[in-house]
Length: 434
Image (cartoon, rainbow, N blue to C red; front, side, top):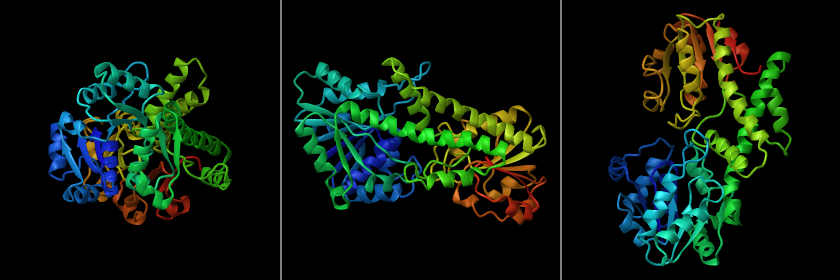
């Protein structure tokens, strides 16, 4: 089966490599020539554990290739996945679909035999029908179906998520399209992965609803962390007690500096705009967005308070910059809101991140210092802020860290450590919600 991925970014590259691992012949197409050249040379433009080896293996086997040639790729495709970016549109919060529709037009003029065009990008309800309209208008004689196949990949564990999914959602309107997609995903039958067949609109909304619900859990526990701090409760214990209820579950109940990344921020905003457009309420999701923004601001106040009321002239070591571990993604990372606020009030920041420093440089103020290792970051620091819970930061030698610092303040925004352990190392410990 010939599969074409339009877009060789995170979703397109991971999905393309995994489909190739299933045995399909996959071509990843992207207009960024430098990205395609790098991929052809075996250089992976993003950090995702295991992706470099999966790409290398399938490229060497001849099942995975990369090109800028849309026309030649589309003409021989059985399935074409649109996996381009859908960023938040400036000014109104809607998902910007210009890249999706541009891809649809380019696909249309090159279609030959029957082809299934699949929306893999996260797109608002109604997009699949609009893609079909664009294709019919551009090429009235085209023989095609449009389907929706939302992705549920977590950065840092995307390959595992693809190969062992909780579910595969297929939004289709014809038996031909359903059969072709079932054939592509047939290798997952061996592990009995649930396959949910829905209409187009339901598939599109499932993605937004799932992300908004997970974001709600994060914002909820972050609100509870504030109450815990006022009452003397421990948010970790509260979250554990909640999570033991099987109706709730323990995932996404970890208090911290707020959610970020490529999905939750833009998808919650887009869902709010969709609700407004259709004239229905979305007060819960609106509150989720507000709580997340306030949580990031609260972290600035928490750091300031731990430093005695002022960060002016203080040297702060920041461990972790990316929005979560095991990725180099800086999109909407809490660090982007927290660090500039500290710098504006006179702090000096020295940051370390195992994978995200190059991505962070153009996004953070120019005067942020970057350390090659943890030891260099914490040297002569008045305070250490644990911003992202990379494994490298979970087992710090606290006695050595304390000796290297000038001050004694440790601010744990991910609740990795226990207070007693810190105090025994001579460190003043601040956490979130306990």
